[in-house]
Amino acid sequence: KQFQRVSHEFSVAGCLHRFTRKEFLQHSEGFFCRHCNAKHECVKQLSFKHLPTVLCFHIKRFQNLGGGITKKLMDNVSFPMALDMRPFLSSTVLRERYGVSGVSPGASVGSQYELTSVVMHLGGTLQGGHYVCYVRHDDRWYLINDAYVF
Image 1 (cartoon, helix red, strand yellow):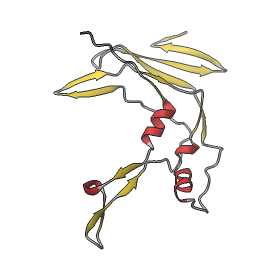
Image 2: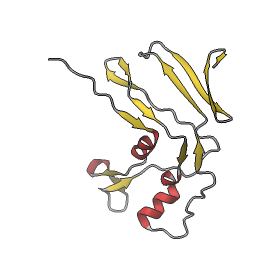
Image 3: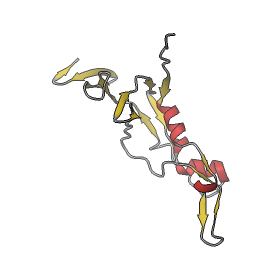
C-alpha cells in the first residue's frame, strides 16, 4: 500500500491566529491561588502589546521527530501583500473579551504592514541548502542570490 504525502497550505494570518488563540488551562495546568491553596481553571492567550516599526516573522519550517532526527517541513506558507495586526493587539483582545472601556482600540497607524521582502531556504534538508531573498523596491520584486540581483 502506498502512502501519499498530504500537502497543506498555511498562511501568515492563520499562523498568527493559532499563536494568539485562547488556551483553556484545566486542573494541573491551571492558575494556583495562594489564598485558597488550590488550582483553578483559567484562560491563557498571547497577544502583542506594542508593535515594532519593522515586523519580521520567522516561521519554523523544521520538525523534531525524536531520536536526533529532524525533517524540513515542505508545506507552503502564503503571505499577504498587506497585513493588519490590530486583531492581535492586547488592546483588541481585552476589549473583545471583557468589553473593557478605556482601553485604546489600537491605532490604525502603526498596525498596518506592507510586505517588502521574503527570505527563503532552498533545499530539502536541515543539513544543507541555500538562502535567497526576494525584495520589493518601487513596486518591483527582485531576487537576491548571493552577489547577484535579478
